[in-house]
Image (cartoon, rainbow, N blue to C red; front, side, top):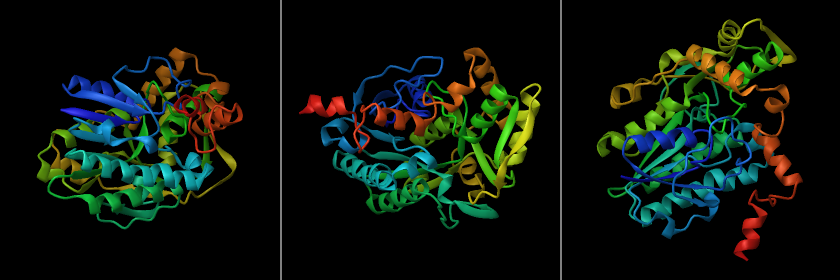
Length: 347
């Protein structure tokens, strides 16, 4: 199957692409490569690609494609809050436009990387795919809107699926430190403190990026009727943790560290406990391999191997929002977050 992956140079995409290739798929990528200066350790996989913004994809880019895996977008809440209008433009409008082009090009499968952030302020109850949306950030709102709009595009010839990923963790060539487990292990390794900015009570489901990738493969390989116009929470029920429980796992993994709370630590409005039974029952190919303890050890080993420092961790190299702000300050990007040299070359 010929698969187009948007965001293939990102945190999840650089891990997913080799798995798609190993499964025998013909993979092509589209990415604006905003984080080309942020490679962590190992090199980024090389595949045929278009270096372009997701907003600039054309019908011709989708020629001969059987399935689209749509990962690209502004990837977290702080970055989404940087400019909510851009989050709306990139994460929502561009995603829907891509789906319309894919449908026009005859692409049969469209797998959208959604998020459990859709549930937002979900409280203490278990939430399944029928639970109400309650997003609290521009990022979460954008994911909800895309699902709603793609639902209207579904028909006998165009089959979208919505994978609501739990909070990701794990090592990647384009590592992110704004994710809870990655972040807490980095604090512990570089400072000796597991530093919590909330009171530790909120619930958060977590899932390794390899297991997210396995979920996309399982959808890609599933009979159409099993996944057509369906949403799936991606993770395992046992991998719902309170933040303080994740902190305790990190403390047990990184020698000599202690748990500290920020002076203003309080409840986090983002609190949700997610039921992932549907994906386990519907897609038997999806067999997650990771949990928080195994992931914390993987991260600790990687930070040791690379010699991670606090300046790396907190600086603009790996911190998404700081990296973007640095590129803006250096006049590499315009206000719409497009590369300026690309615009000059096109002109």
